[in-house]
Length: 167
Ligand code: FES
Image 1 (cartoon, rainbow, N blue to C red):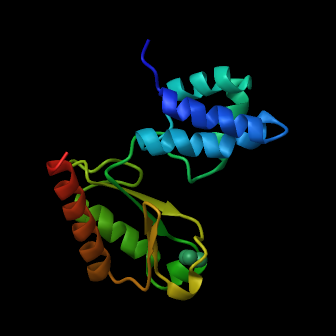
Image 2 (image 1 turned 45 degrees about the vertical axis):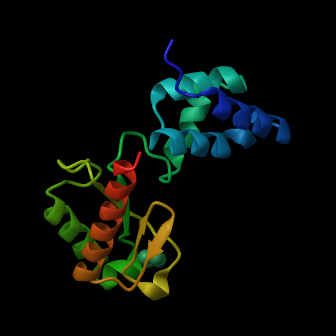
């Protein structure tokens, strides 16, 4: 059987499940763990998590679908979340998101043909005074222009390619 939650991750999840009074409280760290492994949360992993946590899949899916920080389908090597909320929208955030899509020839929430980029327009990421901004992985990039955003992405893609060439 293909395991979507490998042993090391299972151990982490079981520890989290013991840490809280109810298994529901352990869902967020467990889903993050799965996403860290796969880049997204596959339905098969939800099934395995359901067995581990003794929670129905529907309950896990409720949490999974509520939070936009969880990816429900595969994303490119760089998951580019461009804030399109009020401050960012007023400072060109929506145009920036479209510009990145056009540059990488990709629609929102799709993986670019080169596999590098997925662009997601997102709600406020809490850096409104630095609008427009984007989050790639865990890092924030702020006060962006079309040019500076593309520079950041090119640099990150280059670094990713360098790392995978050494693996
Ligand atoms: S509106 Fe974009 S970070 Fe708040």
